[in-house]
Image 1 (cartoon, rainbow, N blue to C red):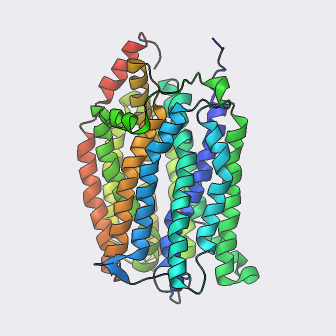
Image 2 (cartoon, one colour):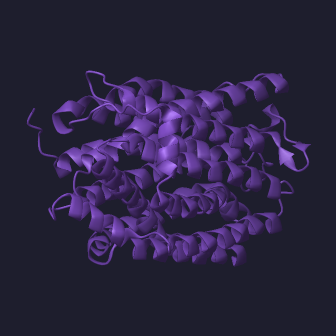
Length: 455
C-alpha cells in the first residue's frame, strides 16, 4: 500500500483558498444581482436597479416576479445537479483523484459565467434579456456545483481526524467570509472606476476584477494539491440517486438537514435583504455595506480560536444551537431597526457571533456523519453526504429567493421588515429541531470503530 503524506495545517490553508474563490463568485451573485436588477434608483443610492430596465419587472404569477422565479429556478437546478455531480465524483477514478480534476476544469468557466451575468443580458430586447439571464444563471449554478461538490467532499477526506475536521472547517469558514466580505466591496470598487468606465461599465469592470481574483484562488489548490498523495480514495460502486437515498436514510443526517435547510432559508432571506435593510430601513449609502460587513467579519474572525477550542471541549451541538438563537436576535433587531449608521453597526456586531459558529461547525458535523458511515460500511461516499446537504439547503435558498422578491414587490419599508421577521420565526424553528441531533453518539461510535484511537 502506498504511504500517504501527512495532512498538515499548511495544506489545509492552501485548500481553503478554493473556498475564498467560490464564495467571492457566489457572494457577488447572491448579494448584488437582486440589488442591481430590481428596484428603483434614488438620489442617495443611484445604483439600485441600474440594470432593471433590461428585464421584466412586473409580477407574472400572483406576486411572483420573473427575477425571483429565475433565481429560485437556478437554486433548484443547482440542488438537483448536486447528487448527480457527487455521484460522478464519488465513482470517478481519474489519475489526479476523484475531486481535484473537477476543480481544475471548472475554475475558469465558473468565473467567466459570473461576469456574463452582469454583461450579456443588456440587449434592447427584454424577452431576449430574460432568456439570456435564465440560461446564464443555470450554467453558473451548474459550474458552481461541479466545482463545489467535489471540493466539499475533500473536507471530510482531508479531515482524517476530529482535530483536522474542526481545523479545516475553521479555515474554510475564514476564507468563505473573507470572500463574501470582499464581494460587498463591489459598489466601492465600481465607484472608484466610474470616472473611467461610466456607471454601468464600472460595475461590470468591478465584477470582472473580482472574478479574476476568485479564479486564481480556485486554481491554486487545484494545482498545488496532489490528491493521490494524501488520500487513498476508492471509487464508490453506488449509483447517484441510490447513493442519495442511502444518505438520507441516515437518521442523524436527516435531523441535521432538517434544521440546516430552515437555517439557510432564514439566512438567505437576510443576506438577500441586507443591502436593502441598510439602504432603505437605515437609510445608509450602499458604499457603507463593505465597512459594516468588514466589521462583522473582523469580530467573527477574532472569535474563531475561541469557537475552535470550545467545539473540542463542549461539543459542536451546543455551540450550533447557540448560534441559531443568536441569529434569531439579529433578525429580530432588523425588524425593529430605525434610521442611522449606528443600527448597521449594532447588527454587524451582533451577527458576528453566530456567523463564527455556523460558519465553522456544520461542515464538521457532516464530515463526522460521513466518517462514521465510511467506518460502518467500508464505502466512502463523502461527496454524496455534502451534496445531499447542499441539495437540501439550496432548496431552502430557492424558496427564500421567491419569498423575498414576492414579499418585497411593493418595495416598502414594511415589506423589508416582514422578510426579517419571517427569518426570525424560521430560524427559531431550526434551533428547536437541532436539539434532536445526537453528536455524542456519532463521535462515540467513531471512537469505538477506530479502536478508541484519535477521531
